[in-house]
Amino acid sequence: MVDVEKLGPLIGADVSGPVISKELSAEELPEIEKTLAKQAVIVFRHQNNSTKQQLSFARRFGHTENNQHAQTALPRN
Image 1: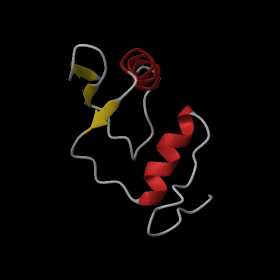
Image 2: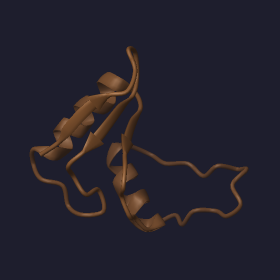
Image 3: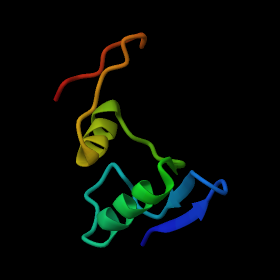
Image 4: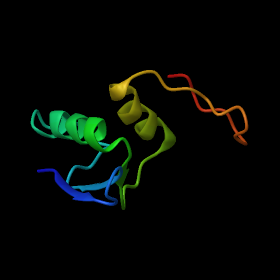
């Protein structure tokens, strides 16, 4: 189950329910995609993800890029 709470009048939503470090259900991923498309910015609070898990989740939505100003580079895989 995906619960969405708008954070502002135009953009932003707090998404709770799914654990994004694990496989999402057939219902969760489309709901997250819909919320991201509508709100532009979504927040998943209280997630305990490794860098690899975070990248795996982010890549479900498209290409990721390294921040050139980051202290360390993220793994490509």
